[in-house]
Picture 1: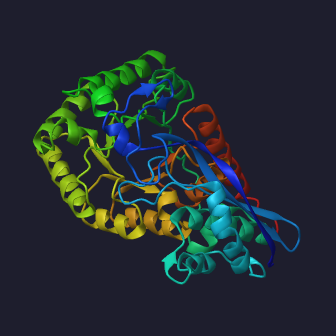
Picture 2 (picture 1 turned 30 degrees about the vertical axis):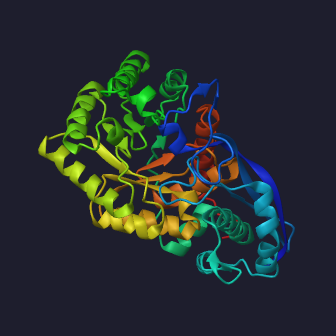
Amino acid sequence: MRVKDVRVAPGMGGFFHDDQLAIREGRPRDGFVYGGSPKTPGFHAVREPAEALLIMIVLEDGQIALGDCCSVQYAGVGGRDHASRGDDLVARFGPLLREELVGAAVSSFRDPDRRFRDLLLDGKRKLPASVRYGLSQALLDAVAKARRVTMADVLRLEYGLGECNDPLRIYAQSGDNWRTNVDKMILKRVDVLPHGLVNDPTHKVGSQGEKLYEMVGCVRDRILELRATKAYRPDLHFDVYGTLGIVFDDDLKAVANYLGRLEQRASPFPLRIEAPVDAGSQSAQIGTMRDLRDLLRERQTSVELVADEWCNDLDDIQRFAEQHAADMIQVKMPDLGEIHATIEALLVCHEHGVKSLLGGSCTETDISTRVSAHIAVACRPYQLLAKPGMGVDEAVMITRNEIARASALGTHRIGA
């Protein structure tokens, strides 16, 4: 089977791009928007609607494969690419994608995906991660359609992965409306919650950490109040975007002591903290996270630390895993770009005994979310982020339903 045609179009992401640096500086909130000027290069406002590039691959038999190029919510910081702009991506990459893909065979996924990883723009630069991400999705979908199997089956067959029917842990993110969304998560028995969007040291952590402490307690108490059975014991996972380092002046002993108090407030539920500090560079982040883990173990504190900032591509994830700089690593798919890198990153985590979060961003689309579900079914990460958006209902529905489809169809491979 070969590619007959390629079409592209500008599209929308599932949430907004936010200027993390400006928000940390305390830009004022005005309803849903932020006032003041942006700080991160590439932003025109502190909060902007997320955009995407939609790729459509038309096969010889008329089937159409889909992939969506998108960037993460906090683009342009922590070593990440700038935010994607739909119209700009169409103009810059539409002709190139058509030139490279039309006439190409889609009998296998792994080798072509690696080849496009090394494709250079103007013979100088690699394609942006967001473009490689959408292209990789479309390639995987095209191969699955050509072979008449699921995307999960393609990955299992080409990477030698065994089948497993154990339940996948779904991790939901609440956005700012966390009180209402936590209730939704509990009623829908989400496995890991709430994310919390703790991105502002003043208004969401507090000068001594009191506001985050209150949030953790409210989530814990609400689970105990609303859960239908004691068998429901979700993990508590809060993404704090380096704000604990800001609040405690990068005093790791103070951060460790505070995390011990948070753990007591979260009990009886396990507590996980993502990006507790931002050390400003990758080498500093690895050393700081490793030191903080050691302090927690000295205090016999079971809080787990999650790496995100400065841990973007496959080489980064390899370094964090080898240095034991985190208990869990977020494999943030739009930052890695091609799906091959995502799968290799998950395998690296498994090899080094580090829990893997197959993640991404609220700014993604329904298409990229469905692809993520197939990767999870094939590769079995420790937990999978429900996306896109911050509304919970739609993200959990899309993610769970696609997992159910991929799992059911894996035992009935049409034409295999």
